[in-house]
Length: 280
Image: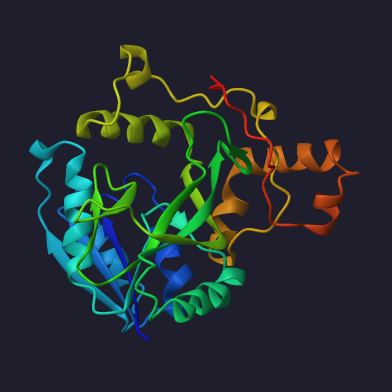
């Protein structure tokens, strides 16, 4: 069995994507990792090259933004076409896998290697927000998605690259991996978060008010979101330690929830109580 990792990258430094952590988080179980690097305004290409691992294979493409947000799935599919493994493990630039889950994921891929009724493996998501110790489960934040797909030419990324589908339009046949995907896209310095939202608007993801384009993004009161008591992938340790808002929030959580069993045991979990309404 061979496993290909793959991702797309553009302006990773400018927008503070943890892309090196993302790639390194799955390299131990990958036989290769394909990175499709777009024409960037920073040193994204050099950053990927600095990982200096023989498993990494870089391809370069120009991004056509006249496609709107579909440019992301188009570039994702270009990277997927370069993959040579039996399975293709996709991570976006702000998605990271915990080292404790690698053996289980590899075992799942081995288990379903010859089961043609399995197209993909699905993850439970942890959408961290504002702090590395808060996550969102309210309306609009999807809680599971596919990130490992069978590399047989029958599956493709679609839309804004948030998921995959079968090319024959049949339902994607999936199994749950039982593992978490750590999504860190919304844990950023507030000025960087504003820049990222403006960039998202330019691509076609959202529409901002004039003030939202000029002012630093506000995460609001973090206490309205569930606390996370578990560990993070070790490749994220330095970023987490340097994030001032997270460290303040962590101290508050430690004090407020000193009695909580999950905190004491440091269990990696998220609450089963889904908040249906959108939290502003």
